[in-house]
Length: 89
Image 1 (tube, rainbow, N blue to C red):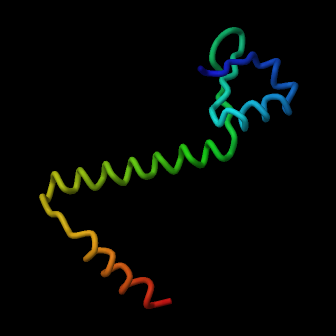
Image 2: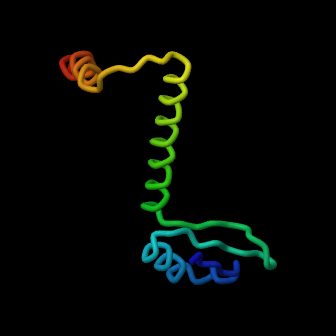
Protein backbone atom coordinates (compact mmCIF):
# COMPACT_ATOMS: atom_id res chain seq x y z
CA UNK A 1 0.00 0.00 0.00
CA UNK A 2 1.50 3.38 -0.92
CA UNK A 3 2.49 5.79 1.82
CA UNK A 4 0.96 9.20 1.22
CA UNK A 5 1.82 12.15 3.43
CA UNK A 6 1.04 15.87 3.33
CA UNK A 7 3.91 18.24 2.63
CA UNK A 8 3.72 19.55 6.20
CA UNK A 9 5.05 16.15 7.38
CA UNK A 10 8.39 17.02 5.79
CA UNK A 11 9.12 19.07 8.91
CA UNK A 12 9.78 15.75 10.65
CA UNK A 13 12.60 14.57 8.41
CA UNK A 14 13.65 11.70 10.70
CA UNK A 15 10.20 10.13 10.56
CA UNK A 16 10.02 10.38 6.75
CA UNK A 17 13.56 9.01 6.43
CA UNK A 18 12.77 6.05 8.68
CA UNK A 19 9.60 5.34 6.72
CA UNK A 20 11.49 5.37 3.40
CA UNK A 21 14.18 3.04 4.73
CA UNK A 22 11.88 0.65 6.55
CA UNK A 23 9.50 0.12 3.63
CA UNK A 24 12.08 0.43 0.81
CA UNK A 25 9.32 2.14 -1.19
CA UNK A 26 8.68 5.74 -2.15
CA UNK A 27 6.67 8.05 0.09
CA UNK A 28 4.30 10.23 -1.90
CA UNK A 29 4.00 13.83 -0.73
CA UNK A 30 0.85 15.84 -1.41
CA UNK A 31 0.46 19.60 -1.60
CA UNK A 32 -3.06 21.01 -1.25
CA UNK A 33 -4.42 17.49 -1.69
CA UNK A 34 -2.61 16.79 -4.98
CA UNK A 35 0.45 14.67 -5.65
CA UNK A 36 3.63 16.78 -5.63
CA UNK A 37 6.72 14.71 -4.74
CA UNK A 38 7.98 11.18 -4.34
CA UNK A 39 10.73 10.54 -1.81
CA UNK A 40 12.70 7.31 -1.48
CA UNK A 41 15.85 5.96 0.11
CA UNK A 42 19.06 5.96 -1.88
CA UNK A 43 19.05 2.16 -1.87
CA UNK A 44 15.56 2.01 -3.38
CA UNK A 45 16.52 4.64 -5.97
CA UNK A 46 19.69 2.79 -7.00
CA UNK A 47 17.74 -0.46 -7.31
CA UNK A 48 15.12 1.27 -9.46
CA UNK A 49 17.75 2.85 -11.72
CA UNK A 50 19.60 -0.46 -12.02
CA UNK A 51 16.45 -2.32 -13.03
CA UNK A 52 15.64 0.36 -15.60
CA UNK A 53 19.12 0.03 -17.12
CA UNK A 54 18.75 -3.75 -17.38
CA UNK A 55 15.29 -3.39 -18.93
CA UNK A 56 16.64 -0.92 -21.48
CA UNK A 57 19.55 -3.20 -22.41
CA UNK A 58 17.19 -6.15 -22.90
CA UNK A 59 14.85 -4.02 -25.03
CA UNK A 60 17.76 -2.85 -27.20
CA UNK A 61 18.99 -6.44 -27.64
CA UNK A 62 15.50 -7.60 -28.65
CA UNK A 63 15.19 -4.74 -31.16
CA UNK A 64 18.61 -5.57 -32.63
CA UNK A 65 17.63 -9.22 -32.97
CA UNK A 66 14.39 -8.23 -34.73
CA UNK A 67 16.37 -6.06 -37.18
CA UNK A 68 19.26 -8.42 -37.90
CA UNK A 69 18.05 -11.86 -36.88
CA UNK A 70 21.61 -12.45 -35.65
CA UNK A 71 22.15 -14.38 -32.46
CA UNK A 72 25.50 -15.25 -30.87
CA UNK A 73 26.49 -17.85 -28.33
CA UNK A 74 26.97 -16.26 -24.89
CA UNK A 75 30.16 -18.22 -24.17
CA UNK A 76 31.76 -16.99 -27.40
CA UNK A 77 30.86 -13.38 -26.62
CA UNK A 78 32.20 -13.64 -23.05
CA UNK A 79 35.46 -15.20 -24.30
CA UNK A 80 35.78 -12.39 -26.83
CA UNK A 81 35.21 -9.73 -24.17
CA UNK A 82 37.67 -11.38 -21.77
CA UNK A 83 40.32 -11.42 -24.47
CA UNK A 84 39.64 -7.83 -25.41
CA UNK A 85 39.43 -6.24 -21.94
CA UNK A 86 40.78 -8.50 -19.20
CA UNK A 87 44.07 -9.43 -20.83
CA UNK A 88 44.90 -5.75 -21.44
CA UNK A 89 44.85 -4.98 -17.71
